[in-house]
Image 1 (cartoon, each protein chain N blue to C red):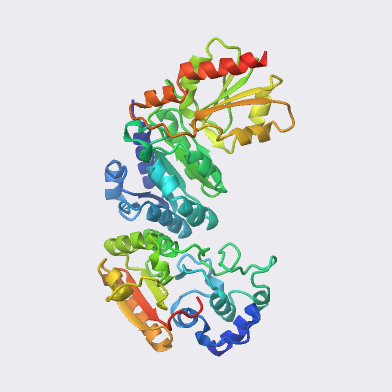
Image 2 (image 1 turned 180 degrees about the horizontal axis):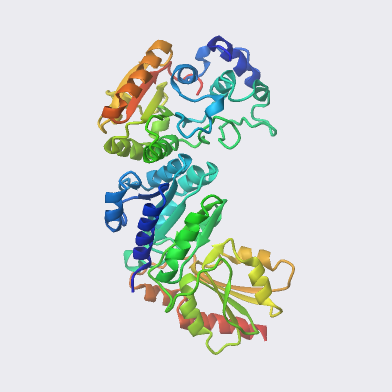
Length: 300
Length: 232
């Protein structure tokens, strides 16, 4: 399967051909994937070296000059290292960009903590004016990236790519998509969590809704799906509880219970594979099933 | 339009302090020369894609900046009196979303030059090669490592439309060594010149030279020396 990152580079390269104001700013990561684009558009494909602060600031400066920048590197360096640049050089300036990360949560399990940033969406959620999109399959990346570029006049987007992917792609939508219906709870699966969620709840009487756009969160959709059970389970591939507050806001007027699954706050000082980390975090199908059945059992 | 001699009076309207001589702020003369003689931007062209850009990176102590903007009629003089109040557009750090003619919101140090690199790239990509980007930094502001990223990169990229003016009031605790600030830029491929930050002719001449020589010479640094450790 073609990786999300490859689809991203191909789509961004096509956008450079189509839109004379599109630009890509890189900090060494993925430069080899933009070779042809760089040859065709040397003035709009910029590699600033291993300088992530500069990368984001250059994105802000390009936007101030009327360009439409895509800024891309590994998640911890894009979001955490350059956080003040995101806050000030994009949001505070009132200009927009599309930030695209790779290395989601524990994609880099073997690389250790330095290359992991499950806190990325919490941080981006705190920056005004950013949408957050989390594709669950490589085939969803092109539509989401094109959508983010098309929405640049209205705001910025953080797009979070992962090597963890669902078994099949879904049509891309800003709304929650109902994958299956049930009565005892609504389980919201974000991005690549859909496949493990579907396996985990295969024989449970629950609704499963799929989200690729988590900011803005589809509060209206959640209210319509919740429909009386009062039980909501969030399954997110990043820090547990990242979207708890938007679910709480969506259901302010109703009695409800919420189970928030995701990457826990403690540091897992262990290498291995992404699968090893999913198991350790209870985010594999068996772990999700344990949590959901516990939650539903407590209900009845 | 107000004259240079009237700037202290405009600053007094912000601060209520009667003691403002021209030397009361390190940046006043540089700002005046830029807006009076160098920048190709006016109140009518603040949204013109081809305008010169002035980025005040060192956003502290912006009274001189606001005074010059008022003197050149980018903002009404009536705004000055409310400086820093809840109803004012003029805060202790400038916000481009609130003040016409202000190109960047600044305050946190070390952001203007990296942003300016992006603006310079953007202007070139749009074919607006006549427009120049001028970034004002302070010598102590250059402590921030983000500037080092931008200095090395802009030199290597050879950006021909970027001028940095570093107002040097020797306020960096550890200084810049025997070669001064300019040594750190020169090693990255910048053209550099040092002039008095109070000498209007010398400043104007330095800016003219940087603009004229730019196409072949890559990015340009003008170090403007002023008295040590006066008000930011």
